[in-house]
Length: 352
Image 1: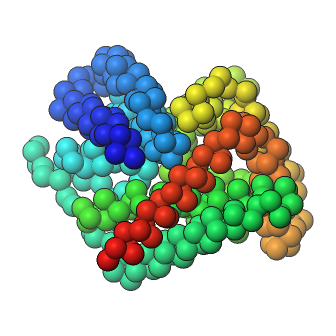
Image 2 (image 1 turned 90 degrees about the horizontal axis):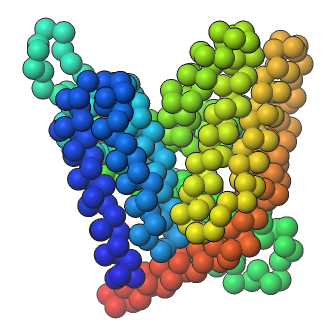
């Protein structure tokens, strides 16, 4: 554990230093390809940094934060787009670049002042914070209960265990995103929700676009969907260009998940997780066409559509998303890390 903490420090110190360089030096380079070229070493560094870690949790989180989100935000920044181009202060730049957060209000330039000082967003109101902390506590309690159930896995049906893994993934991602938002709250920022009760999704389009991991959706839209949609619309028309943009977005998401899998598992990709996202991208495209054809003349009852949506996500996840980490015992390793953390917390509390 001590060695891994040292490795984590060795990873994040150069990451923060690199983001400082981006803010102080790169921001002064003309936007476009000159700035993009200056960022190429940072892209490479952020792709390789997770390889210095061995813990599946720390590696996966670092890969998600730096290799995916930070690199995509910097890609937008190269062309003076996205949240980083609106951030003036160094600490705010680092915060927005390195964490999976989207600030509701960012510092902006005043029209009447050539050297404006950043305006700090309004702090999150206390009632909202209290509700968020209560939800976080409930999710942590549910995850701990799930870990206790794992002790009896040998008595459970294998398919039920896989469903529990799906619940585990959801709870753990929600907890990680909530913990990542704490530094933003400390600085007084109000941030947008990072998820919106995905288990209530009434369609795949609703699940991926408006409920699940909204930070990813917000970063993929300007970096993948909009460019592909605009370019392809000139060739195949607006309608099919939109659908091609949707499918391209899911393909890129699949490839980024493959990279995160490689960082964590350290084996060549099997492309199953890419197939998972290509499948869902195709289904979302078909769903869009079906909605256009029906024009709201016929809809499933909300309860039925919610059950069908969640069931489709879980079944396809068990089929394509989980096989590689299960074959490599990464799931067992991750569960063991959490159980070790729970035991450590128990020992600390016992000493007190």
